[in-house]
Length: 112
Length: 114
Image 1: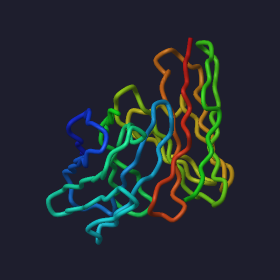
Image 2: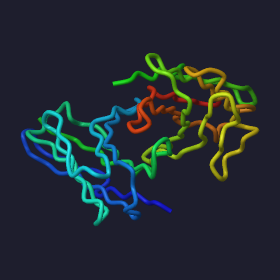
Image 3: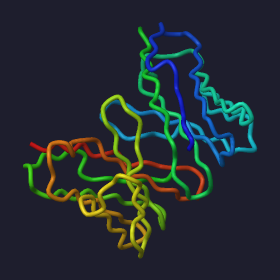
Image 4: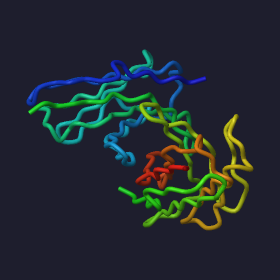
């Protein structure tokens, strides 16, 4: 059974800092991995999708990497801003059209 | 990206009543949609997979008679919480895979049963 872990559960950093959010998964046989952002009481916004054959994806100040063999992914946020404050969730999929298995998320607070 | 619309965003109902939540794909057709539940400070847990034109597939431990799912068209899936009780209070969210790879989510529904 796939398990996804995100540690720590919460993180507080000053504005402008570069930071890395970690995600680990127990079964390396994944189809893809997706990073999401969730604001309080809201739905999920897809940030980055990495296919199993890819090593990383970039979008603006965000960069996600994938090391499938070691069961790890990282989300790098450059020059953090207060608007980046949210919960970041990592999820993996075993196959096309199959369900996502989520971590519990990391709640990020960026202090002005 | 694709747009998934979920309504209502918030609902308060009395214990014993039923509540229907709608999930629509606005700019694509979705043969499969997923329904998740999220408790405070917890991860999203899959409740069921909704398949257009056929019965939903429920995860272990989810009562299919309590959480009725109907996927009557390629753009609409509904979740009905029947005979709701306070323990059903939660955040419910739907998802679809327009390209079979990337998941898009609705805005979520905060259900409070009083």
